[in-house]
Image (cartoon, rainbow, N blue to C red; front, top):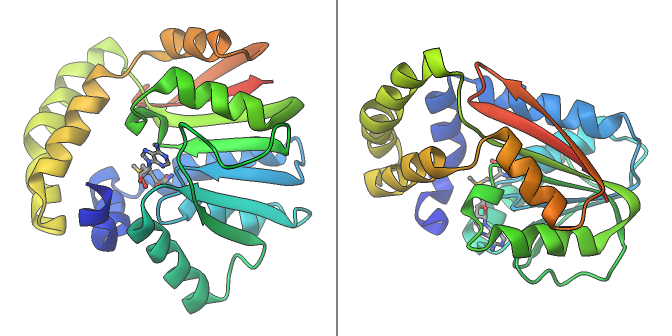
Length: 222
Ligand SMILES: C[S@@+](CC[C@H](N)C(=O)[O-])C[C@H]1O[C@@H](n2cnc3c(N)ncnc32)[C@H](O)[C@@H]1O
């Protein structure tokens, strides 16, 4: 599915979120920067927006790995890297989040932005992330969440009726965005995702909601 929409993925993000996705990713990168990690994995990196933002902010890191299992999405990231000359410290690699081709305890931080929702097995993905983090390393999950109750009816109307139609026009693939809407509606709320993170072996977790709770940033310690 991501291979089909790769070429229009960034444009669709900007339009569908009204540009807010850039701000959400900036909050993620600011949280990562507080702990000055050297070796950073951006899992489900897609077209690389988080990896590029990390590269820009974490000037002290010379090892940022952007990993995804979808080669056309990685190709988009590679085009951007070549066209802009940015992200010299990023290596984009193909790999499955359920079976990471990475050695144990090799990263100080792992970010996953709008990717955990797409993993076929969340527990397995979180356990794999835990495995590749060093003791005390941190996981940052930026993901859609469940909005505040008063905002929910308006949000559901947008998700079910407006988002698939607009996304269909932009990407030519309305079905991909019907899937997106369903995964967002079914995704656990902040507390439930926190419990899933702890169940995967992390020692502590805290979460912050953004934009009436439609997006949350979970930060967990390995
Ligand atoms: C919604 S995109 C998010 C991309 C990017 N992180 C962002 O913030 O825009 C989800 C990404 O997860 C990737 N993905 C889904 N399942 C995966 C898996 N098992 N292993 C690696 N990547 C996966 C998809 O290929 C896609 O690029």
